[in-house]
Image 1 (cartoon, rainbow, N blue to C red):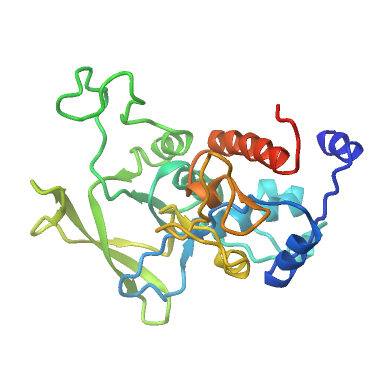
Image 2: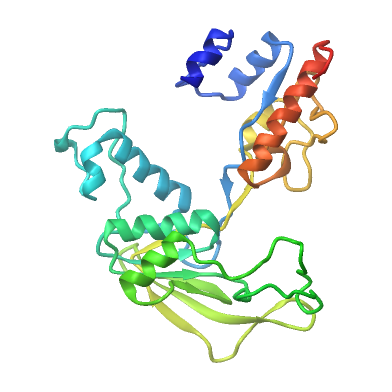
Length: 302
């Protein structure tokens, strides 16, 4: 309904289009203003020994393929066995990553890590553990803030239980999260697939740096390792094609005063400008860049 309303207002939606360097250059030349809202989609990697083994995937690769399978084939909501014989109804190609019957290790947290936990549970994983590099947060906020530097009324950085953690506790009897864990090596099964993850406990020293705890080395069984460690910056093809100036994190450089990039008539907003963030910031910057574009095109503002 909302799409229909926007189309009635004169907005054209072009779907199924690959926006490569040539396409974006043509777009910029053909329009008076162009807004980049391409997100931050390049994930953080974990370049430790064994990273090239099969069975180690990025979180969005795991989640996106799962969701495409569900959208393509409604009966797949009830099974993890996605095959051509069940009659797919979309362009989904069948590249499904299943956690069924596997020892699953999720490295990283946040909403994405929680979704990986929940999806693995629905697939029917054999075991599940979630590694977090930082120490476990406190159960309650330090009201005075002297020790933690997180006083009220700042957003409380405390231990929270999301749906994935609660479901994992119900299934396996304990919260899947393990804190202060540094992954050291992915271990091969001898045939090119991951078999385990070697880790060590870490603690924060007086200088604020992580230090490994002697004698804390462990090896965790792993048939599927999911990297959910956040995102670095937007894909660079469009940024380079437009020769945009970038910040130290390779985001499109633009201020919130006008959202203008270094290219005339090109604006940037959301994660591709500020880095990985929350949807509320995307909404706010969407409104802000719309106002700036209106002024740029000669509008009176609003």
